[in-house]
Image (tube, rainbow, N blue to C red; front, side, top):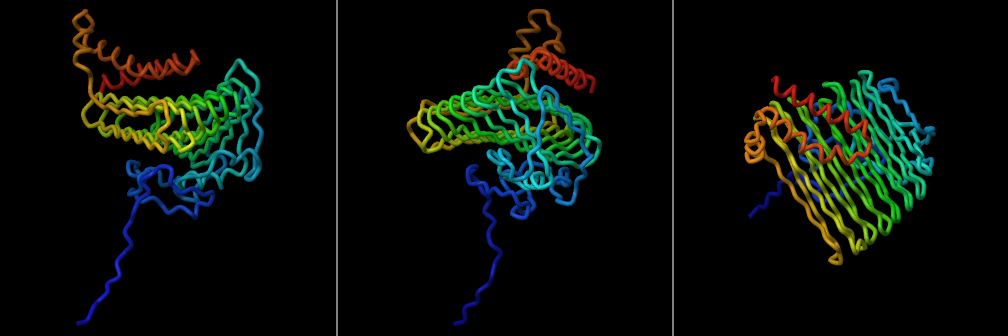
Length: 379
């Protein structure tokens, strides 16, 4: 009897656990994504091709201005650059190597005005690395604003030292053809707080992925997000919250509204409570409101717990259309249907907007929501 052995292709086994995701500063250590990987499964890869190409990019593709703080410069290997950031995907690794000099934003004391970083696209492909450092016991806000056109690979590294309270708000109001892939990574120290808010409205593909490690005892993270996806838009956030130290607290809430054919949002929320994170209290939730036919919201909450000595942990997700009871309640009080729908959407999204704490920006975002609603009604 003759036995024949046939060599077969190795089985592809994607990394399923968020904490096991590979990381490297070298783009060569990452294979080009195929769409089978858990972190790329819902992303339109063809539309972000320029940010997956090591040869793409020009120094004048984006203009960046900073107000409210003196921005220093950090070369690769110059501390504190790299203290809290290790690329976890190909665009972040390419951006790391392309960003020869990273901007270093320092928040010290209690500045009254926020630091504002304006990023304006000029139509090309560019890369940028920003290091935001809140000194011990500092209290401050950093606002990142994105406008214009182009393809931007962006790394944002956030260091919240012991006792500090830092708010980072990133607003995406790109032109319709813009592509933005951003990795935000943060480490929060003892008795420190990070409030991180993502507001995505414009752009063709916008992918902003925050990753936060609560390293110090008593540290806290408040991670909030709002997205309004129109026809053809893809707005995505993959959130990772790692409770590493004891007595840490996490609150994650993202909300999205979708209108128009092929409007698409993706939210993946991963929470890991490590073996040393005793006394942890953590909760994550995602809510989506689908306003028209043809829109699709992907929502995937995940929770890993490696210790049983915690105060609480949970997650929730809900996606649906208008609540008919809410509309009936408003219409029964003489409010026309169109106005009733507007009030419901504003009320739904304003919960996130009102947490920003910058009155002028809050008013601007409410106006943006009104414009989006009017555009949808006209269509």
